[in-house]
Structure formats: C-alpha cells, structure tokens
Image (tube, rainbow, N blue to C red; front, side, top):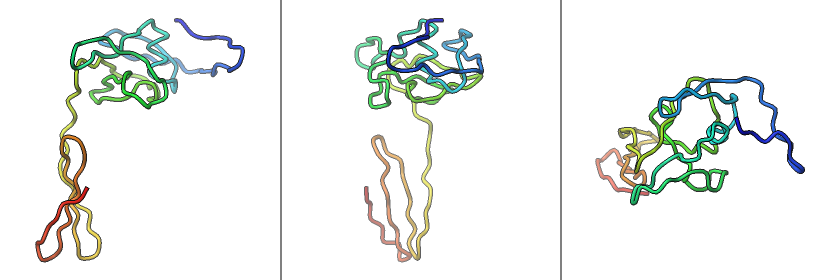
Length: 140
C-alpha cells in the first residue's frame, strides 16, 4: 500500500483497525474511518468515475467535498469518496456517467391546520402547502 508515513508539517493519522472492502468486485483493504478516497489511493486506484459527457476519467480533485470529481457508488448510492469514512464490507463501484438516484416518494409534514407535502423533482425538492380548504400552492 502507498501511504504517507511521515510529513514535515502534518502528522499522518494513526489508524488501527484494518477492514476489507470491494472496489469493482476486487477485494481490497484499508483502515476503518479513513476517507474512501484515501483507501483507494493507497491501493493504487486513481480513477474513481467516468465523466457523463465524454467518458473522461475522474479522480480526486479538491479532496474536501466541494466538487464531485471523486463520486463513486457505495452500496448502490452515489457518494463523495473524499468525505465518506471507510467501513468494513463496503461495495464500492466506479461511477460511469450520471448515477441513477434512488426513488423517493412524497412525504407529509403537518403544522397547525396546514399540510406540507415535499415532492422530489429532477433538480430540487418542491414544497407544496395545502390548507384544509384544499387550496394548494407550490413553494421552493
């Protein structure tokens, strides 16, 4: 494994528990609690996903959760690998193109005499307020 063991400014964290995980079906190991991206890098994996438009390889970029270059599928859910802690038994997959998001249904929140329904749409959740008279209006 390729790991930083000494550094002139930062002290590398001391991880104790080694865990096994899968990356694209290949059994690998890392340390529980370290970032998934760190475990992948330590196992010489630099390509985490493929861009949706041209298939260009993507890997670690900002390393602090601000971009989505390091997004992988973890147990079927798209997650940023640089801010997701590694756990034993994770099934991590290369993300090829845009992820298929899990289905979400509307849910209700009642406040006073109003019922608020949240509906998922492609880019954001919309909030629809329905009064007891049945008059509804959408909000963002």
